[in-house]
Each structure stands twice: as C-alpha cells, then as structure tokens.
Length: 281
Picture 1 (cartoon, rainbow, N blue to C red):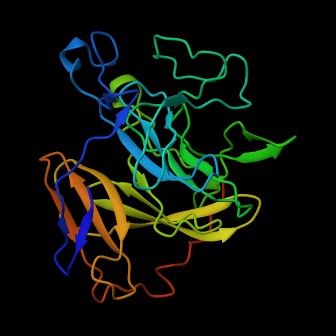
Picture 2: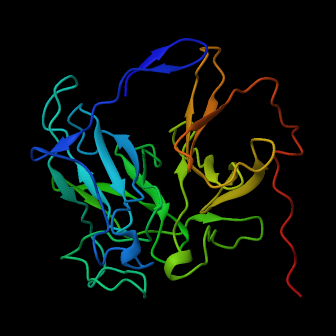
C-alpha cells in the first residue's frame, strides 16, 4: 500500500505481493496451529522490511502461525518486484533449538522460533550488516547477529544480551503452547544499538536502552497511549506529519489502525533512567 501523504495519512489501494506467481498468503492448514484445526485459515503474519542480502533492494522477512522465519527475497527492482520465499538458515546448533511444543522439526539449520512474533531486521551492531532482534524459542528477547565469513553472510545463534534493571534476561513472554510468542515488536530508529523497542501491550510499551555494557540494559517506560485498546497488534513508527518527531501507528484486531501523534510527549531525566538493581538477599 502506497501512502499518499498529508496530515491525515491516506493510502492508495493495496496490491497483493506474489511469490512464485502466487499471492503470499500464509495459513495454518489442518495442523499448523498449536490451537487446533479451527485456525486452518489463520496466518498471524508479522513482518519487517530490510535489505537482507545487501543488494540495494528491500526484502521482506516474515514470521507467522508456523514460527518459521521466511525471507522473501526481492529479485526484481524497486518498482517491479519478484519474491521467491526462502527459509532463513544460520550457524545454529544441531538440531536447531525449537519450542518443546513444536510438533514439526526444522529442516537443516532452519531458523524456527515462537509463533506470531516479529522478526525485527535492523543493523543493531553497527557493522552495516542487517541483524535480527526477536524472541528466541523460549520467549526471551535475543539478538541474532550477522557476520561475513569468507565472503558469505552468516546468521549467528541467538544471544540474550537484553537485560532488565535487575540484570535478568528479558523474557517478553514466558507462556507455553498457545500462550507463547504473540509479541509484535518495532524498532523506532533502526540505529546502532538503539535497543529502543516498542512491544504490543494494552497499546504499546516502550523499552528504552538505559545503559550499554556487555549487555543492553533496557527498562520499560510503560505504554505510549492512554487506555487499553483491546488486542492491539503490530506497532509501526513513522513521522506522519513531517514535524521531525516520530509518531506511532498500531494495527488492531478489528482490522482498523490507530495513529498516535507525538504532541508534547516528553520524559524527565529521572523517567529515562534505570533504577538501581535490587540487592539479592
């Protein structure tokens, strides 16, 4: 969908993306959902856009009801695109880690994580290679770093480098089976070690990078919006009105979206500082 601009954002009619000549429509089928065949037509897709192979063209990385991360590589141009689907693979353990309740086995070193959680593609380490920030197979926020070895790009195993104010790895969702995953994440800036993430909640919680040491100390600053917008989904950050301040847009389970403009929203220095860690007894 092309955004046409204006203070009140307008969009042109959407065009469906195709891969191998077929419309991209990921569905569970009879056995793809941990919640049973009643969700055969569900897909729960969540995605990010980035130049994954560094050829100058935007690609699409998708996770879904299956929990397998797919790379739709742009084989065309910026105006005429072609999208063959490829499974992401990395230098992962053998067999690759997967959730205990995942009934199917990854192929080779295929990247499989929890379902319905966003693969955030961003150059997190600042080496000009696009990395992944997302939940690992146990619901912890993790960095999947990219590295170039012998002229080839590698995706390294996940590292739980994000910790809370008590230096504990951040587990965004401890749930199992149908209660696992479900975290939609956005990176507001995309800058090196930004670690400023928006995570879906009653609307969207802001996790701020408070300190950078061997680990990234992140602290939640709470929800950005007022009140509870029942079952919000993917947050997106964009400067809608061109005033130089990032605004936020949420997709909602009602199919409609909600835009929150940043007008006068400010945080004190104290509010942006992590509290001291609790001393263990």
